[in-house]
Image 1 (cartoon, rainbow, N blue to C red):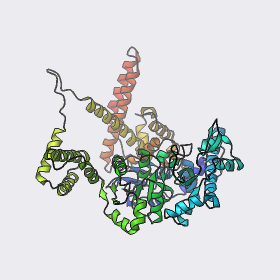
Image 2 (cartoon, one colour):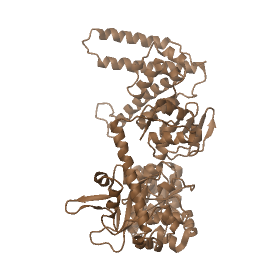
Image 3 (cartoon, rainbow, N blue to C red):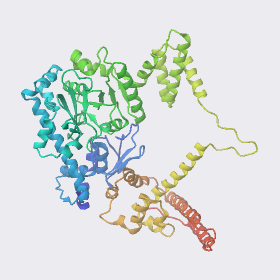
Image 4 (tube, rainbow, N blue to C red):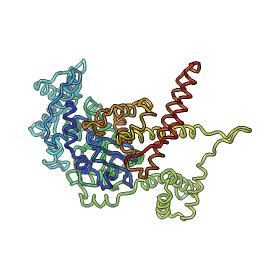
Length: 606
């Protein structure tokens, strides 16, 4: 992607109201100088997502994602940084002169652009071919499947032609090289037959990214497939297409006003659903749903309705999807389409109004899992019935750590499966106790051993506490110059952890934070890694509005600076050679400095 000058990037950021941008995705309410809402990046019931317009930043205290207006669009809309800059520049009416790219960057960008172009030309070719005499068979196929001409046009449906090299010859005439055609996956090469089309004699489904660029294709063979001919064929993965991260129909569904996404299995399911008015429908490509697909959906912070096939394979796929969504914290429910196999059949038979009713009565995903699990037991056999009840109890324990939620599900299960409420509650309690593994006993005559896992957690907790002290002090020093001047005699920039903390400490000590051109939001854009950007946002949100009384500031500053200086002295001692004659001297000096620190009355901002 093209790169832009830092001055222009800052101009775009400064002329963009971060509240307006984020407010399109999150309902925000003001608390003082900060706005809060439910985080768009993880599921939560209590708002922990904050936006601070004065700093041009957002930060979630729950999942710790943070950044500026550019990183928000990158995360929410799967944009690259240059794409986010261009998007906001267009909104603000700012012209972006391009900065010269390196030869390698230009070569990579040109190749991606050419791959986009070749797919766009291939889509045009397929589209026109279907509307010619040659495409009558594919056109009739789509019409027989109940699709209107408007829907066919909306999804860019086409036909690949009956000859095995017709697309190759067309692309060759457009000036594309054999190397690029091979890289696109549209043309394959074999020594015994030379170049030939990957797709021929197939009804074609263009696959688009969220910004409506054609990046791949799916093709359904016309007629009965041969022994070695797959019924459906997809493009291979390329430099612009990753099937594990792509959802068919998302280029339209991302703009839906509906509160949920509908997830189904095939191209025709998605298209039929959109034609019926369900523009929130998407499908995974060729393979089962992946964790990457789930992450894409998670970015939009909507619950999901599963509308997979009702056969055995569809049920297995539904159960796998439920586990993935549960792991990602995305609520999901299951739509019952029986007696029909898939959404396409359902829509043809009963229509949109009946499907709306099925949505309203969609089954809770946990209760669906339990109902499917029941198939493994013969409930007429007392022993197997007991085993089923024990299995249900274990599932309740595993899924619902909160007592109130656990009790709600216990009530529902007892009603659904005619179990005495008190008896099942006792079973859940017994299973919970049985599932607790006792710690190893202490060795005779020795101290009680701390399990390795708990020891690791304690060390991790101590390290995180030190990191939090660094964040707190950095935020205060950046915000209040008077605090920086008090800290300087005791701490220097290299007393902070390497990485973002050290970078920011050096900027603060140089006085960069007092410059008009400096801002936390600008600092975020200087980092490429998402975790670094989030850490900058976290630092600048750590010390906000937490102290009021002068004595509170004195105590907090003294304890924070003391902890960091003590850590710095300890680390220095570890690095020094025990035989170094200056080691004792430096140790004594360090202790004197810590004593002085203890006697210093720090002052907070006036």
